[in-house]
Image (cartoon, rainbow over all chains, first blue to last red):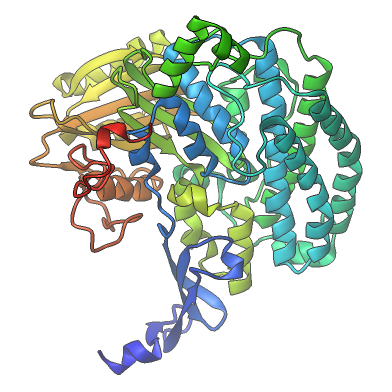
Length: 407
Length: 167
């Protein structure tokens, strides 16, 4: 090995002056507090200016698509939890809806409204993490500590509904596993009462803060056209001025019943991404408010005995229920042949499931369109020419979740 | 959505003729099967033509059907026209002995990593790709794990039967 490799120094021609200068190679990650997960960026630096970057991903790749080929449909839900673990209920629901589309199931209105409440709660939780972490990366720890109380309340609601906080496994193919308990409603109402004040407190702290604005405005920008070419979706695309939202474009799960706006930005920089998420939290709040107000009566799951586990008392007391229970657990149900794609608006963009079924007990092929994976490839282009400190902010404002990046 | 199948199908057949092998409606998606050597031209046409305007490559993934002789491997593309909210799926198949397909990185920047991922898992070689190397698995790996001949469980183990996996 030559000495050059050991010193990590090489030269480049400065385009402004035409002279030959040395650049430094800097490894940002794989395990660095500011990378928010395990991925490496090899940066070529001229002083503090980034000349080039090469991201490396795959450190926590777990072969979900292969494992899914060996799991009955209902067991795949637990794989989807672990994609974007900041808002796992949305991934769960996305998977359930994909299978429901495949088998052609009709879901009762109440189940859809319950799903909307859970999905919007998890969107708020996801955005809380992303936005408070942007603030932490500019040095504002206070928002992170205070605003996390709201996220804690949301996780308590999840815990009340399904027993888990992070890897939730909420819902079933055909609806919800059970209706919200009175305790869960109580917690939801308490969250609805507390959230506006907490949100306003955080907004007052950060949104018009001089230091925060100086650090974020103009950092890591991307144009709308470029963003679309890179396959951006979700808040990152909307911050660049393209109002694409799956909830409005291809409404699923009764989203067409609700009134809400799609916040859009103009510059596609860190501040716009932050502000789009801030406004989206208010929109999600209003959707939950409408869902609670207009909550229909009725059943919380569809009549799907071949896919929906019967209640335990029935399994113990009736032969039919026992047979169905057995068939579901062993994954012996008839599934139509075909190919289906369904996408939902997850915390950071369009999360899609492409499913090829050959009629067997497991999917023949499952492909997950993971928004993080697709847009993270734009990262080098976004940070080129900027400062190292902007690169950190750009990464946190893109909301790159390592679990979803690698799958 | 089936009128989309007719309108896009007519334009594609008029422009590319025999390169469009089949068309069908799969749930809410119009699906077209095309010849692989025309895929880049077709994608360019879908991108540039003012009536088509499919400027958003949402998904790209590899497929493996070992029992389809002569067309074992395949690639599925999903395009989206945002202003009109039209979505279509294009599929192309080719033999496993010659797993090459033109890359779409010249048209869509988002194809870059997605094609690398399918190369990594299926060994599909995207000709014209600027940086075709493994992305999620390690570089030293010498097989393509998503192909059907590789089992989920370790084949050398006798205590775990693959048929019972997940039960």
